[in-house]
Amino acid sequence: MLGDTFQDGWESAKGIFLVSGHYAFIAWFFFSTMFFLIWLYHHNLFTKVIPTRFNRQRREVCFMPDGATEPLFVPWESLSAWVVQAQGATQYGVIRQYGMGMGFEHEGELVRVEFQCGSVQLAISNWEAVRGYMEYELHDLSTLQDPLGLQEPGDPPHEGLHTFRNARAGLHRRLRDKEVGRIYAFFWYVYHVMTLWTLPNHLVEWEIKRIAKVGRRALPPAMQAWSEPLPPEQWAKPSSELLRLSAKVKALIKRYPRKPITEVYAEVYRSER
Image (cartoon, rainbow, N blue to C red):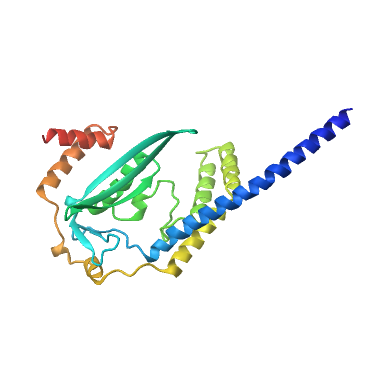
């Protein structure tokens, strides 16, 4: 009787697997096709879209709006930046979305560039990276990247196989120095095995090579000339008002180092009223 029960259960499980497997394959094919088309669309934008460029020697930002034939140059200190947060309720729960944008008003219209972010903190960090670069507080990519030592001198700026190798070498070093234990190292390997080991890194390397092969849209002559370096004596200087406000921000950060940067800026602007 026990054998009959097991056989019935096995047949039922097999039937469920065969029925659900058919629909699972259809769903997999549909979503894979959809994601591939989305990826292909965004990949082709490299040949159609000219990204916003920042020139800290001139203290200007260059925008190339859709449909425009000539770029627009705007002073850095006249640029507006914002972080947005939206949420809505669905049948699956509350969904939150975050984004960061920057732009300026041109002939009565707002020229802007916006993109999604994973969190408010990440959106603010994106802006802080741009601001730090334009104000000569950040000079290279290593200053912006995380402190985990994933980029070694001479490595390309993008993530790839070198990122994985550096992470593994860092793990072994921390293990030798007894900063982490064997259990931590074991689950580090388990996590990377579950995320297909170096396959994501290989895909990044392949995508970088494909972008280089496809090429990017050529810059207009005006933007090329604008992007040329200037001699130091011709570099633009920050305004006295910006220097004064920056000094207030730095003093407040030094006084309250754990205070959120948004509250620091808000307090400085309140004091100006």
